[in-house]
Image 1: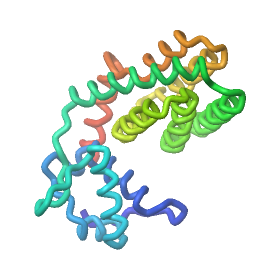
Image 2: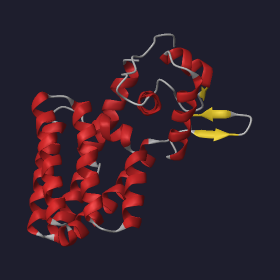
Image 3: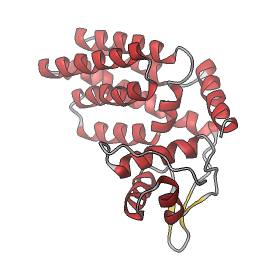
Length: 228
């Protein structure tokens, strides 16, 4: 691959590189078994090896790649069933965050949650899925923090990071962004009302990928692979 990808100066190179590499992994540009050579990646993206090395370490920390002595970085095999299993666990972690947030959220945290929700609305109206996803991460992080359970926040954040590329691709499914925002509204309403059971149920349903939504995700992955 010899095309150079544009790296915005306003974004830390290693973070942006990580996003570009993880999307290429998920969409099959770098299929399972691919060895990710630092120099080749540096040439591809038009950067030095240092941010590439940092990006690979970040991706390794969340399990998207494997780094082994004398073998370097490689892309592991992750089947659709495994992705579905991870989403099942993510749904339960977020449901727990929502339950606790509805009981423990402070007035300042309520304001921060609503602000994050409104930011998502602006991205939805502008029809910018990648911007919406970035703001969506902030929205979910506000809920994690409002749970006031440090261990839960660590676990939810780690798995959220592992599923980032899949959650981002989901938002490119037709109408998914608008549906996601409507689900956010129901979640915010339940948390602000202090209805812990409803907040938990709404978050579980929002994150669970099954049935048609799982089929849509698999189809989106297939379409991306066909277009590469």
